[in-house]
Image (tube, rainbow over all chains, first blue to last red; front, side):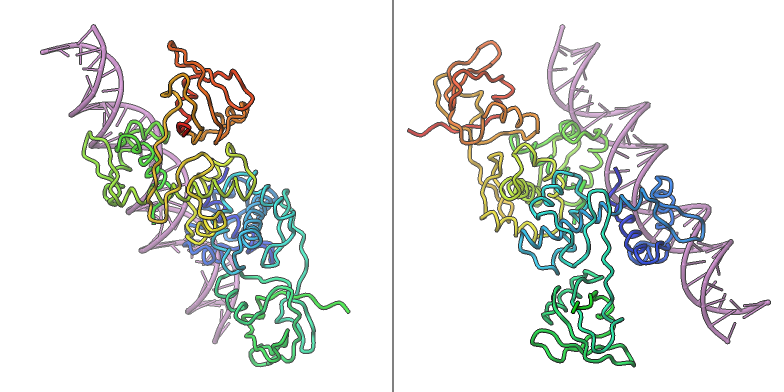
Length: 220
Length: 220
DNA sequence: ATATTTTGTTAGAATGTTCTAACTTTATAC
DNA sequence: GTATAAAGTTAGAACATTCTAACAAAATAT
């Protein structure tokens, strides 16, 4: 088995790789808040264990073994988040830090039981897909809200970041998963959007916020 | 905050101290499966942090600070065990190892929520008392079954060990908490007991087993 | 009461994870 | 296309946790 620490590196590599297929040392260092030389030596270790490929001065890529390992940790994280929200009554803005700890628990039975009690969920409380027992994840391709056009009507499907602050911001605007959003206008200068949803007719979102909101077009 | 490791030492000291009020290095070493010199250096560290008093060649005693710290970890352990049994459907023989891991989770909210969902339980699935939020534990003084006399009728209240094997043995004999037991005879030679309970009229228990079963006399 | 066993301690080394300082390679800017 | 900045690496040290080997004190046994 792998250590707590190794699991955190694998998860970070997985998350950074999601878009580009690879992760570099500098980004990992920032994301994990660990200095570059430390990350570097851990890359050597993970490469020796066969989880990643790392050529000098090149970005890091997960092997299929590493990808599966990472996906299974993420599975535990997301099942936990779902359990905390659905079965224990936590808010979606309260579960990330608890799940970060529980994801390292070594007990297949524990997570199998959660899965069963939840009815084998496919997504977590933030709209992210939960990998299956083999580490396979079904990717639904959503759009970022900031890439939509004025006049579009879309459905809020997921968030790309799960920090307390961001989710509390969305709560304060009553902007929850499943909400239908109409884009009234986009400020060309800074990407600020004016949107309408539920009873809120003129809500304004900064580009930073819009980049973290994933949506699907409404099917007519 | 303290590390995982420090918490395990504190818990072991607490458990060993329960009877005698103190714990020695050799017993800690055996219980934790860590060599004596390692235990010794950790004792130095815990003493510096004010959790224990340790004079050379003397047993170790918890300070009130150390006792509270340990009790709060045990509180998390026992709440977790209760949650796993009552809310997730695990057997009492399946929860110890999972709780050993979850007890180290740092999140007062998480354990407060468990406590609330369970209705503020006072005992865990093995009959052990759950310390309150201040680390205070209500000790109910039970007797060990092996200390009872032939003819006694007693109620099975708790176990002193929570290993899988022991609990599975009790399951296989349908010997569960709350069972009323009549002691038919005791073999003077080896302490083996013949008992009667429910529909089982001639069950035989070794002394080792009887030492691990805590009972209360039936009030007439 | 001395010898033996058990328990406890000290010293020194190994492993894992982290750091800083110094250096190298790659990317960017002018 | 050279200068500068950014990213990556190497070397060496620090801290936590563990170990083995050697030694010391306390308990026990005859």
